[in-house]
Amino acid sequence: MSLIQTVQDLNLWLDNNGRHGKTVGFVPTMGYLHEGHLSLIRKAKEDNDIVVVSIFVNPTQFAPGEDFKEYPRNLERDYELSCEAGADMVFHPEVSEVYPSGATTAVEVTGSLTKTLCGLSRPTHFKGVTTVVTILLNMVRPDQVYFGQKDAQQALIIKKMIRDLWMPVKMIICPIVREEDGLAMSSRNVYLNAEERKQALNLYKSLQEGEKLVEEGVIAASKIVQAVRMYLERAPLAVIDYVELLDANTLEAVAEVYDDVLLAIAVKFGKTRLIDNKILKSKEERTCF
Ligand code: PAF
Image (cartoon, rainbow, N blue to C red; front, side, top):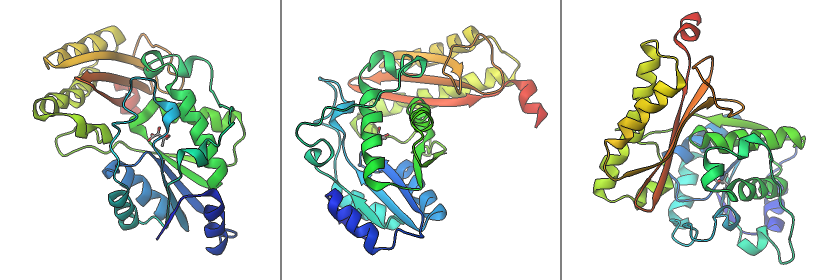
């Protein structure tokens, strides 16, 4: 396994390891890896000959006052974990390698996908994400790139960018990985104190509550959203950013549950903002399968 810091070394490594005639899978991350990331690396290893993992805390996706400086970092541990999960190379560029002095180009997906959910409370976030993902894809030039469903909005935006720009890469979205008690894995979970961690479980439980209502035959979005909100409000430390029921492909608001709808939530515990989601299907839809 190799640790590479520059694009020149990255290309040299890929050429020396015979990238031509082999498939390259790429897992972009901001590090502080958890089981969610490792599941992406394992899947990439299953699907490809060579697996590249990038570890880069991208400054442009954090707004002033967000946690860019505090974002947890541990390169040595990430390197070990990536290796164990099957990565062949870890790419860990400096900020100046990704954004060389004088770089002024950004990539932005406009329209409804970026104007809802996290796009409202973090208006500059997705532009930073699509810009860095484009740069990293241009650097690595993989055949397949892997993202997690936990960041459902991010995945949809990147999917649209890849489609709109005819980027020559196949995108694979992998399922959410949860702690044993149901809390979705996130690098930011380490910020939670014991009481916040306990109450944060309500995110998952509130999604289950929404799903249960749908199973019982409730289809009105307003009823489901209200029930999820009420469940979240049982946690006294929870400050709700949003609870939304949206079309799972377009992120447009829906009045009723049908086919695939996305129940998405964002909640703050102190300074820690957590997101989670569940795809719901109407009862009739599910009985068709
Ligand atoms: O999901 C993340 O960790 C980041 O947003 C990504 C895709 C690695 C871009 O910095």
